Image 1 (spheres, rainbow, N blue to C red):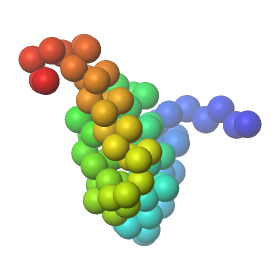
Image 2 (image 1 turned 135 degrees about the vertical axis):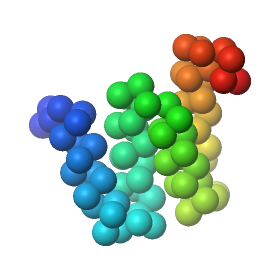
Image 3 (image 1 turned 90 degrees about the vertical axis):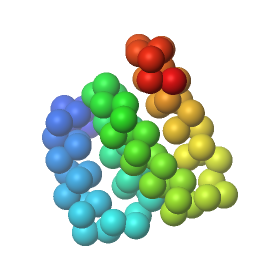
Length: 79
């Protein structure tokens, strides 16, 4: 397994998602990177995009919930 810096992974993933805007797998990767960077609002927005693309996929509902809970734990005013 390669351990690339999150900034590099974000850059690579954004490059792919610009070309494949409706690819939920790459969008999910981007959402996870944003989450790990502490960019919760962007992560939630991206995960919601995945939900729109794949509404029956439970994974994306869990991602939105996980990202939202982390955001709310750090800033209860956002909930």
